[in-house]
Image (tube, rainbow, N blue to C red; front, side, top):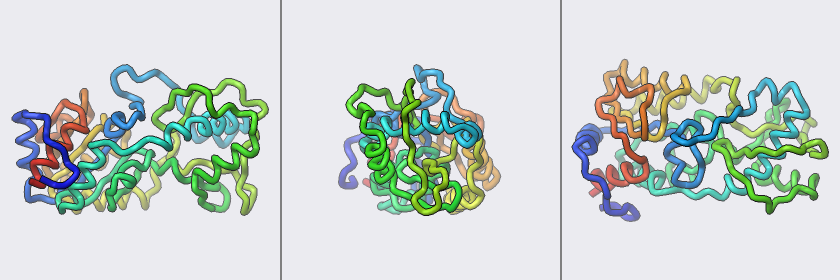
Length: 281
Protein backbone atom coordinates (compact mmCIF):
# COMPACT_ATOMS: atom_id res chain seq x y z
CA UNK A 1 0.00 0.00 0.00
CA UNK A 2 1.30 3.46 -0.88
CA UNK A 3 2.64 5.64 1.92
CA UNK A 4 0.09 8.15 3.18
CA UNK A 5 -2.93 6.21 1.91
CA UNK A 6 -5.16 4.87 4.63
CA UNK A 7 -7.08 1.61 4.84
CA UNK A 8 -10.05 1.59 2.46
CA UNK A 9 -13.40 1.84 4.21
CA UNK A 10 -15.60 0.81 1.29
CA UNK A 11 -16.68 -2.55 -0.03
CA UNK A 12 -18.87 -2.24 -3.09
CA UNK A 13 -19.18 -4.19 -6.36
CA UNK A 14 -19.30 -0.93 -8.31
CA UNK A 15 -16.05 0.17 -6.71
CA UNK A 16 -14.45 -3.09 -7.82
CA UNK A 17 -15.75 -2.52 -11.37
CA UNK A 18 -14.33 1.00 -11.38
CA UNK A 19 -10.94 -0.19 -10.15
CA UNK A 20 -10.86 -2.82 -12.89
CA UNK A 21 -11.42 -0.06 -15.48
CA UNK A 22 -8.50 1.91 -14.02
CA UNK A 23 -6.02 -0.89 -13.42
CA UNK A 24 -3.01 -0.84 -15.78
CA UNK A 25 -4.50 2.14 -17.64
CA UNK A 26 -3.62 5.82 -17.77
CA UNK A 27 -6.38 7.61 -15.87
CA UNK A 28 -7.37 11.20 -16.64
CA UNK A 29 -9.28 12.89 -13.81
CA UNK A 30 -11.94 15.61 -13.81
CA UNK A 31 -12.92 17.01 -10.40
CA UNK A 32 -15.56 19.38 -9.10
CA UNK A 33 -16.64 21.01 -5.85
CA UNK A 34 -17.55 17.70 -4.21
CA UNK A 35 -13.85 16.87 -3.90
CA UNK A 36 -13.30 19.88 -1.64
CA UNK A 37 -16.32 19.68 0.68
CA UNK A 38 -14.31 17.61 3.19
CA UNK A 39 -11.85 20.53 3.32
CA UNK A 40 -14.64 22.80 4.55
CA UNK A 41 -15.47 24.43 1.21
CA UNK A 42 -19.20 24.04 0.49
CA UNK A 43 -20.67 22.89 -2.81
CA UNK A 44 -22.85 25.30 -4.82
CA UNK A 45 -25.17 22.52 -5.93
CA UNK A 46 -24.91 19.82 -3.27
CA UNK A 47 -27.78 18.81 -1.03
CA UNK A 48 -28.54 21.64 1.40
CA UNK A 49 -26.47 24.21 -0.48
CA UNK A 50 -27.92 27.73 -0.04
CA UNK A 51 -29.50 29.45 -3.01
CA UNK A 52 -27.31 32.39 -3.99
CA UNK A 53 -26.69 34.70 -6.93
CA UNK A 54 -22.94 34.87 -7.62
CA UNK A 55 -21.30 37.93 -9.13
CA UNK A 56 -21.30 37.97 -12.92
CA UNK A 57 -18.40 39.30 -14.94
CA UNK A 58 -20.65 41.87 -16.60
CA UNK A 59 -21.82 43.27 -13.25
CA UNK A 60 -18.25 43.33 -11.91
CA UNK A 61 -17.08 45.38 -14.89
CA UNK A 62 -20.04 47.73 -15.04
CA UNK A 63 -20.29 48.89 -11.43
CA UNK A 64 -17.72 50.19 -8.95
CA UNK A 65 -20.24 49.50 -6.19
CA UNK A 66 -20.45 45.88 -7.33
CA UNK A 67 -16.65 45.64 -7.31
CA UNK A 68 -16.57 47.08 -3.79
CA UNK A 69 -19.16 44.55 -2.64
CA UNK A 70 -17.25 41.72 -4.26
CA UNK A 71 -13.85 42.69 -2.84
CA UNK A 72 -15.25 43.37 0.64
CA UNK A 73 -16.77 39.91 0.77
CA UNK A 74 -13.85 38.24 -0.94
CA UNK A 75 -11.37 39.91 1.42
CA UNK A 76 -13.16 38.49 4.44
CA UNK A 77 -13.77 35.12 2.82
CA UNK A 78 -10.14 34.70 1.72
CA UNK A 79 -9.00 34.20 5.31
CA UNK A 80 -11.17 31.09 5.68
CA UNK A 81 -10.93 29.97 2.05
CA UNK A 82 -7.16 30.37 1.92
CA UNK A 83 -6.66 28.37 5.11
CA UNK A 84 -8.46 25.27 3.77
CA UNK A 85 -6.26 22.17 3.64
CA UNK A 86 -6.20 19.25 1.17
CA UNK A 87 -8.25 16.26 2.29
CA UNK A 88 -7.85 12.52 1.79
CA UNK A 89 -9.36 12.70 -1.70
CA UNK A 90 -6.83 15.28 -2.88
CA UNK A 91 -3.99 13.28 -1.34
CA UNK A 92 -5.21 10.05 -2.94
CA UNK A 93 -5.17 11.62 -6.41
CA UNK A 94 -1.67 13.01 -5.81
CA UNK A 95 -0.51 9.55 -4.74
CA UNK A 96 -2.10 7.98 -7.83
CA UNK A 97 -0.24 10.45 -10.04
CA UNK A 98 3.04 9.78 -8.23
CA UNK A 99 2.39 6.04 -8.67
CA UNK A 100 1.93 6.39 -12.43
CA UNK A 101 -1.82 5.71 -12.49
CA UNK A 102 -3.20 9.25 -12.94
CA UNK A 103 -1.82 11.09 -15.94
CA UNK A 104 -3.29 14.48 -15.00
CA UNK A 105 -6.09 16.28 -13.17
CA UNK A 106 -8.53 18.77 -14.68
CA UNK A 107 -10.41 20.62 -11.96
CA UNK A 108 -13.39 22.95 -11.99
CA UNK A 109 -12.35 24.15 -8.51
CA UNK A 110 -10.53 27.41 -7.82
CA UNK A 111 -9.16 26.48 -4.39
CA UNK A 112 -5.70 25.25 -5.45
CA UNK A 113 -5.98 22.21 -3.18
CA UNK A 114 -4.87 19.69 -5.82
CA UNK A 115 -1.59 21.56 -6.26
CA UNK A 116 -1.14 21.88 -2.51
CA UNK A 117 -1.76 18.14 -2.09
CA UNK A 118 1.12 17.38 -4.46
CA UNK A 119 -0.57 16.81 -7.82
CA UNK A 120 1.86 18.06 -10.45
CA UNK A 121 -0.07 18.05 -13.74
CA UNK A 122 -3.16 20.11 -12.94
CA UNK A 123 -5.31 22.22 -15.25
CA UNK A 124 -7.57 24.63 -13.36
CA UNK A 125 -10.44 25.18 -15.79
CA UNK A 126 -11.85 28.13 -13.87
CA UNK A 127 -8.58 29.62 -12.61
CA UNK A 128 -7.32 30.01 -9.06
CA UNK A 129 -8.37 32.25 -6.18
CA UNK A 130 -4.74 32.52 -5.03
CA UNK A 131 -3.95 34.75 -8.02
CA UNK A 132 -5.17 38.22 -9.01
CA UNK A 133 -5.15 39.63 -12.55
CA UNK A 134 -5.19 43.17 -13.93
CA UNK A 135 -7.85 43.34 -16.63
CA UNK A 136 -6.02 46.10 -18.51
CA UNK A 137 -2.35 45.07 -18.69
CA UNK A 138 -2.47 41.42 -17.60
CA UNK A 139 -0.18 41.84 -14.59
CA UNK A 140 -0.53 38.99 -12.09
CA UNK A 141 -0.35 39.31 -8.30
CA UNK A 142 -0.28 36.82 -5.45
CA UNK A 143 -3.66 36.90 -3.73
CA UNK A 144 -2.08 37.37 -0.31
CA UNK A 145 -0.33 40.53 -1.53
CA UNK A 146 -3.70 41.99 -2.56
CA UNK A 147 -5.23 40.89 0.75
CA UNK A 148 -2.48 42.79 2.56
CA UNK A 149 -3.17 45.91 0.47
CA UNK A 150 -6.90 45.65 1.18
CA UNK A 151 -6.21 45.41 4.90
CA UNK A 152 -3.98 48.50 4.74
CA UNK A 153 -6.54 50.49 2.75
CA UNK A 154 -9.45 49.38 4.95
CA UNK A 155 -8.29 49.16 8.57
CA UNK A 156 -11.86 49.37 9.86
CA UNK A 157 -12.87 46.01 8.30
CA UNK A 158 -13.50 43.54 11.11
CA UNK A 159 -11.34 40.58 10.16
CA UNK A 160 -12.49 38.66 13.23
CA UNK A 161 -16.15 38.63 12.30
CA UNK A 162 -17.91 35.29 11.94
CA UNK A 163 -18.21 34.47 8.24
CA UNK A 164 -19.71 31.75 6.09
CA UNK A 165 -17.43 31.03 3.19
CA UNK A 166 -18.89 30.25 -0.24
CA UNK A 167 -17.41 27.89 -2.86
CA UNK A 168 -15.74 30.80 -4.69
CA UNK A 169 -14.19 32.21 -1.52
CA UNK A 170 -16.70 35.06 -1.26
CA UNK A 171 -18.97 35.99 1.64
CA UNK A 172 -21.95 38.32 1.91
CA UNK A 173 -21.22 41.84 3.18
CA UNK A 174 -23.93 44.50 3.49
CA UNK A 175 -22.13 47.83 4.03
CA UNK A 176 -19.47 48.53 1.39
CA UNK A 177 -19.84 52.29 0.86
CA UNK A 178 -16.56 53.09 2.61
CA UNK A 179 -14.65 50.21 1.00
CA UNK A 180 -11.45 51.19 -0.82
CA UNK A 181 -10.33 48.71 -3.46
CA UNK A 182 -6.79 48.60 -4.83
CA UNK A 183 -5.98 49.03 -8.48
CA UNK A 184 -3.07 47.75 -10.55
CA UNK A 185 0.25 49.22 -9.43
CA UNK A 186 1.55 48.96 -13.00
CA UNK A 187 -1.21 50.66 -15.02
CA UNK A 188 -4.00 51.60 -12.62
CA UNK A 189 -6.36 49.06 -14.14
CA UNK A 190 -9.16 47.03 -12.53
CA UNK A 191 -8.02 44.02 -10.50
CA UNK A 192 -9.97 40.76 -10.51
CA UNK A 193 -9.25 37.35 -8.99
CA UNK A 194 -7.83 35.13 -11.72
CA UNK A 195 -10.96 33.01 -11.91
CA UNK A 196 -13.71 32.56 -14.50
CA UNK A 197 -16.74 34.49 -13.27
CA UNK A 198 -20.28 33.57 -14.23
CA UNK A 199 -20.79 35.05 -17.68
CA UNK A 200 -17.18 34.46 -18.75
CA UNK A 201 -15.82 31.68 -20.94
CA UNK A 202 -12.97 29.32 -20.15
CA UNK A 203 -9.94 30.61 -22.10
CA UNK A 204 -9.41 28.47 -25.25
CA UNK A 205 -5.82 27.63 -24.31
CA UNK A 206 -6.97 26.42 -20.88
CA UNK A 207 -9.64 24.19 -22.39
CA UNK A 208 -7.15 22.77 -24.87
CA UNK A 209 -4.76 21.93 -22.03
CA UNK A 210 -7.62 20.16 -20.26
CA UNK A 211 -8.58 18.30 -23.44
CA UNK A 212 -4.96 17.21 -23.82
CA UNK A 213 -5.10 15.54 -20.40
CA UNK A 214 -8.29 13.70 -21.37
CA UNK A 215 -6.82 12.61 -24.72
CA UNK A 216 -3.76 11.29 -22.91
CA UNK A 217 -5.84 9.00 -20.73
CA UNK A 218 -7.35 5.58 -21.30
CA UNK A 219 -10.02 5.93 -18.61
CA UNK A 220 -11.73 9.11 -17.41
CA UNK A 221 -12.50 9.40 -13.70
CA UNK A 222 -14.97 12.14 -12.76
CA UNK A 223 -15.03 12.94 -9.03
CA UNK A 224 -17.30 15.34 -7.18
CA UNK A 225 -18.83 17.13 -10.17
CA UNK A 226 -22.49 17.30 -11.16
CA UNK A 227 -21.24 18.28 -14.65
CA UNK A 228 -23.70 21.17 -14.90
CA UNK A 229 -21.00 23.46 -16.31
CA UNK A 230 -20.64 23.03 -20.08
CA UNK A 231 -16.85 22.78 -20.05
CA UNK A 232 -17.13 19.62 -17.96
CA UNK A 233 -19.69 17.98 -20.20
CA UNK A 234 -17.55 18.81 -23.26
CA UNK A 235 -14.69 16.85 -21.73
CA UNK A 236 -17.03 13.94 -20.99
CA UNK A 237 -18.12 13.99 -24.63
CA UNK A 238 -14.49 14.00 -25.76
CA UNK A 239 -13.86 10.87 -23.69
CA UNK A 240 -17.02 9.21 -24.99
CA UNK A 241 -16.05 9.86 -28.62
CA UNK A 242 -12.67 8.30 -27.93
CA UNK A 243 -14.46 5.24 -26.48
CA UNK A 244 -12.82 5.75 -23.10
CA UNK A 245 -14.60 4.11 -20.16
CA UNK A 246 -15.96 6.79 -17.82
CA UNK A 247 -16.18 6.34 -14.04
CA UNK A 248 -18.30 8.88 -12.13
CA UNK A 249 -18.04 9.32 -8.35
CA UNK A 250 -20.52 11.82 -6.93
CA UNK A 251 -23.22 12.08 -4.31
CA UNK A 252 -26.40 12.48 -6.32
CA UNK A 253 -27.17 12.55 -10.02
CA UNK A 254 -24.90 14.11 -12.63
CA UNK A 255 -25.33 15.02 -16.30
CA UNK A 256 -22.76 12.35 -17.12
CA UNK A 257 -24.47 9.38 -15.49
CA UNK A 258 -25.91 8.07 -18.76
CA UNK A 259 -22.42 8.12 -20.30
CA UNK A 260 -20.71 6.38 -17.38
CA UNK A 261 -19.57 2.77 -17.47
CA UNK A 262 -19.69 2.87 -13.65
CA UNK A 263 -21.44 5.38 -11.37
CA UNK A 264 -20.61 5.34 -7.66
CA UNK A 265 -22.99 7.38 -5.52
CA UNK A 266 -20.70 8.06 -2.57
CA UNK A 267 -18.33 10.60 -1.10
CA UNK A 268 -15.13 11.31 -2.98
CA UNK A 269 -12.67 11.20 -0.08
CA UNK A 270 -13.43 7.62 0.95
CA UNK A 271 -13.90 6.41 -2.63
CA UNK A 272 -10.64 7.89 -3.96
CA UNK A 273 -8.77 6.60 -0.90
CA UNK A 274 -10.12 3.12 -1.56
CA UNK A 275 -9.16 3.34 -5.22
CA UNK A 276 -5.62 4.46 -4.39
CA UNK A 277 -5.24 1.69 -1.83
CA UNK A 278 -6.26 -0.95 -4.38
CA UNK A 279 -4.32 0.42 -7.32
CA UNK A 280 -1.09 1.21 -5.48
CA UNK A 281 -0.94 -1.87 -3.25
